Image (cartoon, rainbow, N blue to C red; front, top):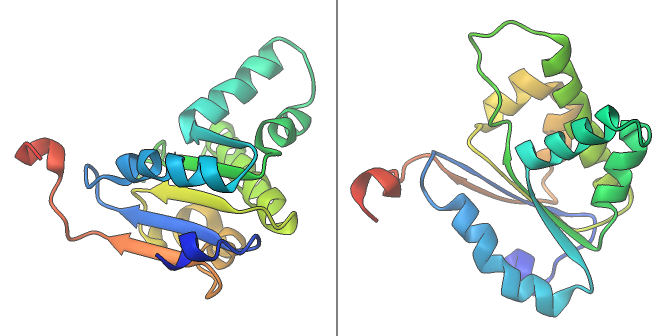
Length: 161
């Protein structure tokens, strides 16, 4: 795989596709390579990252932006299930806007710091544009990134693997 042979720090590995095709399993399979390649890494489901930020706010520890930076300031970060909270039938809200802001800040920090990052999502490229707008879309789908798209495979959970 191109990304694994030469993980350019400013490049992202983006894996988008249908539910149940093995994106989270893929992240787990990368762990051995990540462990051998980087001194320190972190893996989050997006919902877990958001919950940690909420907990920090509730505990009054610090500004959530500072908390976010401390959570993602590692050589390699894997962020799984980005946008899993999104439902197009639910109108915009402050909570939704906060989640969008968090992902933008996450992405901006990782790319501007030139830190390698893996992101998975069920959202299509078009969904990313609709939900996060052009500033996120252009960073994710840059020609410099390695992008895997699979919306054709069958949900392995439904077929029994």
